[in-house]
Amino acid sequence: MSRPGDATRPDGEVAPNRGSRLMRHLIILYPMTWRRRYGDEFEALLEQTPLTPRVLFDVAVAALDARLDPSAPMRRWPFMFERLRSSELAIFAGWIAFVVAGLGFYKMTENQDLFAGGALGGLAYVAVMVGAVVALLAVLIAGVPIAWAIVRSTARTHRWRQLGLLAIPPISLAAWIGFTILLITYVLPGSAQAGAVQIVPFIAWVGSFCIAAVASTVAVTVAAINGDVPPPLYERARTPALVTAVAMACVVVAVVGWGAAVLANDPSLFWGNDGFLATSTALSWLGVIAGMGAGAVIALRGAFVARATRLA
Amino acid sequence: MAATQEESKLGDPALLILTSLAGGPKHGYAMVDDIEHFSGSRLGPGTLYGAIVRLEERGLIEAMASTDRRRPYRLTVRGSQALAREIATLDRVVQLVKVRLTGSGE
Image (cartoon, rainbow over all chains, first blue to last red):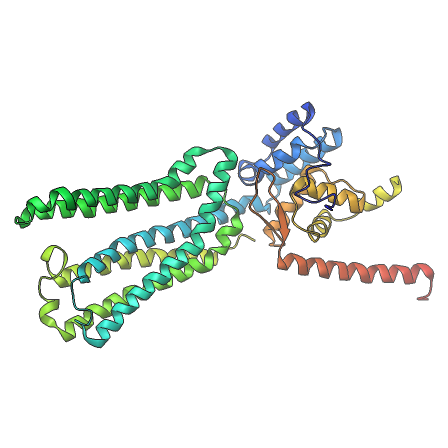
C-alpha cells in the first residue's frame, strides 16, 4: 500500500482549479535562471496548490528571496551547470575529431604489416586499438543515459525537433554509407586506371564523412543544450569523460610510438609514400597525430574543467 | 490541534524535506503532502522550493529523471548522513529537555 506522500500515488492530489491556473503565473516573479531550472516542476506544483492569501504571500516572499539573496544558488548554479555540460560536450566534440583522425590512421595502416615497426611497433598498434575501444566504451557509458534522458524529455514535452536532432547522426551515417556504396559501384570502376581522377572521389568520400561527423556533433550538442537532462547525469558522466580523455591521450602517445618504431625499424617505409593517396607516410602520420592530438587536448581540457566544476 | 500545528511550524523546512525523502523519492506535491501527514505543517510552494534549491546546492538531495513535469528528488548519501547527524542532535536535546522538565537532573 502506498503512503500518502508516495510520488507514484496519484490520489490525494488537488485537481487544477481556476485560481491555481491563475497562480501559476506567479512564477514570473522568479529570476529567469531559476525558472529555467525549476520552472516546469514549480508550475506543476502551483497548479495543484489551492489559491489562498497565505500561499500567495509565501510564493511572493520566496521569489523575492531568490532575486535578492546574493548567496542564492541560482545565481551561480546555471553557470556551474552550463560549464559542466559545456566541458562534457567539448569532450564529445574532441572525441569525434579524434575518431575522424583515427580512421585516417586505420586507413593508412590497413595494408601494412602489423609489425612494420618491429615488436614495439606492433605493441604500439595494439595499444592504439585498445585505447580506442576504451574511449568508445567510456563515451557510451557517459553518453547513452544523457541521450536517453533527451529522448524521454522530448516525448514528454512533445518537442519533436529535439528528436529530429538526435536522428541526424544515424541518418548522416546511413547517407555516408550510401554515398560510399555509390562510389564503389559506379564511380571507382570507371576511373580505376586514372589516378588523378580517383583523388576526387576519395576527397569527396573523406569530405562527406567529415561533414557527417560535424553535423552529428552539432546536432547532438544542440539537443543536449535544449534537452531536459537531469544535472546528476552530467555529474555521473564526469568519470567516464575523464577516462575517455585519458584513453585518447594514451592513443596519441601510442601513435607517436608507432611512427617512431617504424622509423627505427623500416626507414624506407617511413620516408616512403605509403600514406594517404600514396603520399608521404611521414606527413600522413604527422597529420593523424595533429588531428588526434587536437581532439585529445580538447578532451583533456574539458575533463579537467568538468572535474573542477561542482554543482553542489 | 491548532497548538500542535503552531508548534510544528518551528521545524526547519530543510529538515522536514530530508525527513520526507528518507521515506523514498518524491516530487514537490508529494513532499508537501507527506510533510503535512507526519508533521501537521503544510509547507507553501515558495518555502518548499526555496529549501529544495539550497539542499540540492549543498548536495544533500538530488533530482531524478522525471516522467512528467513533476520532478522527483531523493536523498544523497551526504543527505542521509546530514539527516542522521541532525536527528542525533535533536535526540540529545529531547533527552535533555525531558530530564530538565522532570527535574531529575537537578
